[in-house]
Length: 108
Image (cartoon, rainbow, N blue to C red; front, side, top):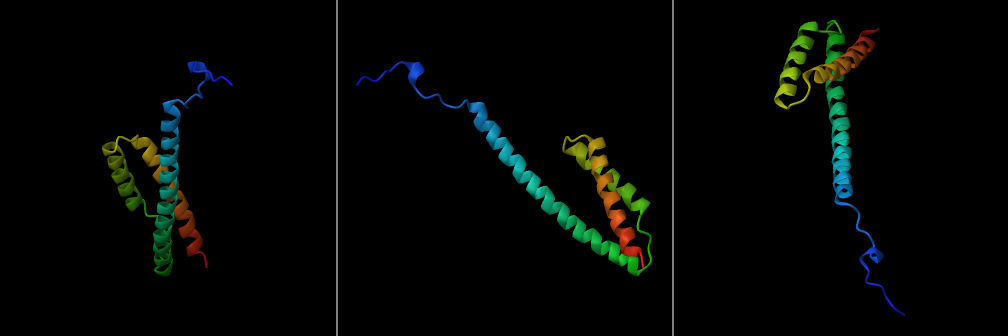
């Protein structure tokens, strides 16, 4: 029985970029999980805000607060080197959902 020592007969190592890709994807999965948990916590807080608003007959939407939050988030996005327009769209989507929840809580 003879064994070949020719380099092409050796098992190939996966390219290094595959390891990096796997590591990046694992990080993305962890970040996505953290985002889901953070959004869940945010919605727990906004649910309580909606309950307080409904109890005290305040309107479901607060345009002044929303404008302040958008400006604040745009600034944070700029500081984090994230597109402020994207951050604003993301927050606007969340605010829209929060208002929908608040309107549901305000219904008798």
